Image (tube, rainbow, N blue to C red; front, side, top):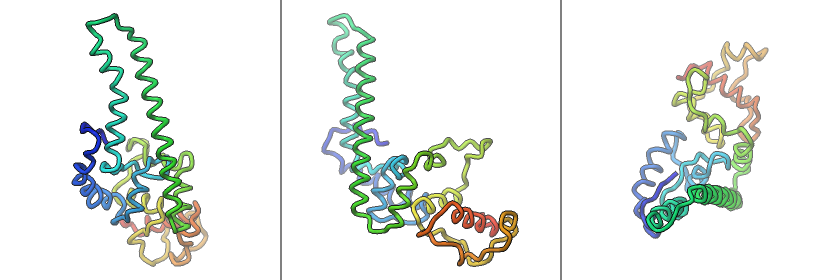
Length: 220
């Protein structure tokens, strides 16, 4: 999330940061450049099908406003410290209510943004991908702390491929050979990559076949 210390109306100051995010960070994570629409999708929280990579140009004003709301109880505490007796319980209650209100407002904002984006998406495949990504637990791999001893760590190739499968992007460097011996452990016959259904009919079996094929080729 973007924490803005500027007053509202200065969102253009974040354009250089957004340029770096758009041109360098996202291509490293997604394996390719993204369109304007895809950039808006990636800015959504993971629970709404995005990756939580906010566009600071668009979110800075809201972040500043939220910061003001969150710190208002503390500002009031400082201003009245020498004038009257302070009820800390009341201060904590006001701060907690402010956090809850902001969380609810953010949730509503992101839900409305997703609905608006869905009206502009022309690809049925991408719509299905977002519906799947928004299901409970579907983004656990994206938000989990990458503890290696728990198997939560992904190397760069695994992460890029996971993002590609999440949004229906092309999975690169899969080749056209047959699934190797690893696949034979779970399938009675080798499956050519050309015979694996496209992302238009993505299922858990499809994803498994593609991932097994990738492992069999030992591309990392």
